[in-house]
Image 1 (cartoon, rainbow, N blue to C red):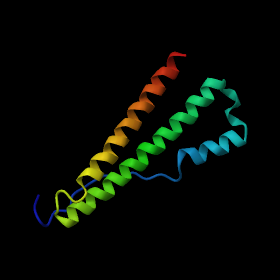
Image 2 (cartoon, helix red, strand yellow):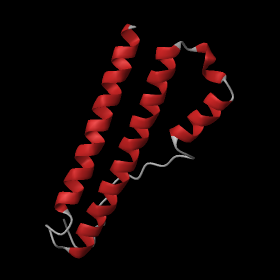
Image 3 (tube, one colour):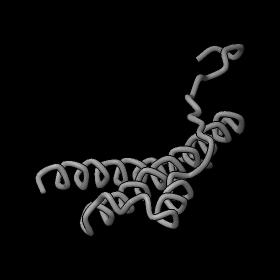
Image 4 (tube, rainbow, N blue to C red):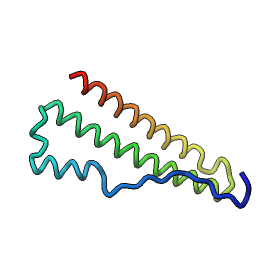
Length: 103
């Protein structure tokens, strides 16, 4: 990478956490259209998506810091840990979603 080029690392954005939005739905009783398992799957999916989102943002932050510091090992293990957590949370969310479709 050239000195003058700035790396592009996507930064997703959102208005608020899914779990915050879920609380409004639960407290308002709007999730009553779902059966008990459906409500549990929805809560788990929201939590896992929030977790993946947060872990990605942490990995992105550490990656940008590493690029600034030009020390390839200063943040590497933290980056790997957060990306691994992000992928694991996404994989679990996909598994829960696919399992809930079968029910």
